[in-house]
Image (cartoon, rainbow, N blue to C red; front, side):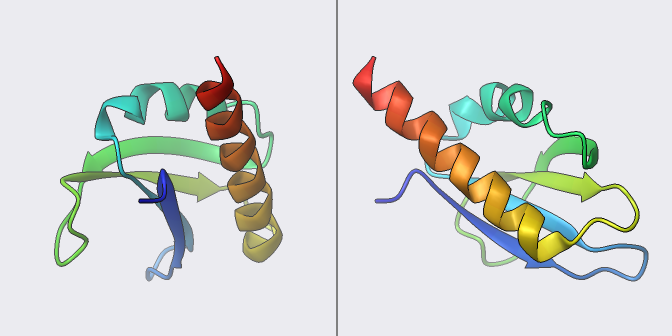
Length: 89
């Protein structure tokens, strides 16, 4: 099982990136890890609704004029690095 998956979501007000963790106990650590991105306006951990198969997710709100596709790639790369480092420790 992969440690996480991320998706771009469209909403009426703004696009977001949702991150679903296979180990939800890491939510707060991942949130803190992502706070180093200047392009991120806000990060929240919330209950998942629907068919996501995980109880909660991390929602990343980006600042205006940020390319969401590039940002998703950056976040994914950063998370892969995070989990790689965590597995080595």
